[in-house]
Length: 349
Image 1: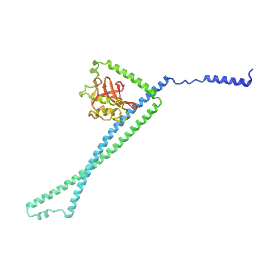
Image 2: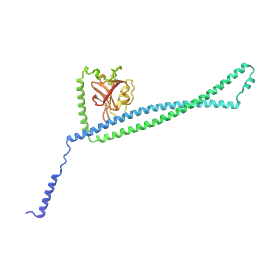
Image 3: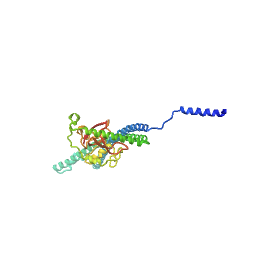
Image 4: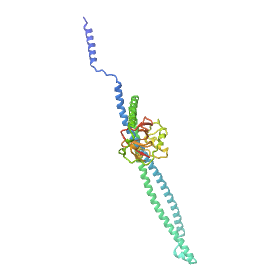
């Protein structure tokens, strides 16, 4: 027979074991759990990437506007300097003339008349005095006009400098927004890179397979007039830019960059087209207006293709339903299927 103290210990052990049996066990995360987490984080990162693209292109547009304003400021400063130099010349000339008149006094009609020995000499002297007076009046009128112009130019300069300050502040805000979003992206990405990389590779493979299937199904009859939203372009396609673009496969994406070692999306297309003597602005939205509109049915290698609303991404069509682009932070210049759902159109510079 068990002693009372030992019997109580046994009962306590049994009771504790029973309690443990009622506590739900926390199973270790499964592969599917990790994949679901990776998909959720990847969705958040994709949205951040879209926001980064929009903010980066807004920064590029503000940068272009600021550069244009700075050029105007330099031109206004040059005009103001020229006006001030002319004012200085006129001031010296008129001051010298005034000093001469003060010392010698102006000649009267009687002095001119009695200081000459003939009518011809009188007429000649009078003409000289008239020319001097007219010259003085002209110089004074010019001085007034140049001073007015200098004042106007100074006001324009002040306005442009104030405008440049506003745009510079906007650029700074856009830059801060991009950097904050990139920091958040890195935070989300930390520790889950491999899972997301696997998901992205699987998605890329599926997208490329779908694009190849779509291209193989397409025939010449699919390019009907009903697919054309614009008349066939009259400019010849610039297919030579495709080979140039291919030389930069693998170059890293970096927002605000325009080559030669790193690019953002519009910086890449701008850099490639500059190699064939075509100047494009560093903005996808601005590039959309830099050539003839091209319907999807009329796409040719070298045409620019655009994405997003508002437009915030651009690439170069390479043919076969594919395009080359500098995609986003953490990615590199690569060829991808033209199957994005936010495709908005194309143009031919």
